Amino acid sequence: MEYESVQAPWSPEHQIQRPKLTTKILDKEEKATFPLDGKVPRYLHFATSRENHWNQERGYRIQIVSFAGDALPQTSTMERSISWNRYKLAVTKRKEEEMTSTCIYNQNDPWDPLVVFADFIDNETIINEDLVAWVSVGFLHVPHAEDIPTTVTLGNGVGFLLRPYNYFDADPSAKSPDSVYFTAQQDASKCEVTHVACLQNTASCSPSLPPFTYNGFENLTGP
Image 1 (cartoon, one colour):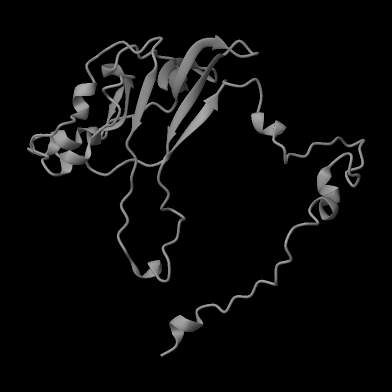
Image 2: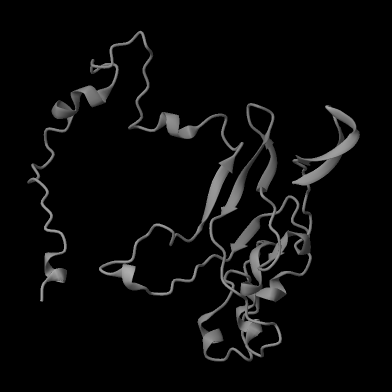
């Protein structure tokens, strides 16, 4: 995303800055690494030369939901053992000898690590190659009273999304076995239109579950 200066239609003597979506091809490993304290493009798109029905390159988009915390300073003698922590995202050419970003022995001897992730990034080309996306995610949770009786998940999510981006010709979930689609001219109560209308017949083998009961926090509020 970039900003461009254009003439204001309602005030020709002034300029306005408007956002513009631009495409930039990252052809080397060094260009496809994003430091933990740096900016990440809004859209990270891995594309192939194959096109879908709409003449768009098939690919996937990486959408990072949460980032790791502060990186260990590179001046530390232990830093090379966890040098993957320098990056939010790093894209490298796939190699059999670069299967993991660290190893179990690094924790015992972090001053002389067997695997140094930073060495994976040696500026090789990533065009028309099998690629590996190394994503660092994380969050910091400091325990507090509202964690009792259990820590809530809201606001504590961590991870990233690998989303199809022009990979299909349409939403593939429309063809899922449990999907329902009918038009206004069809009777939605008929079994031949939607199997959900006949759920009692099709799911007659399902178990009979007792009514759900909940006693609140009885065991927590007593003496």
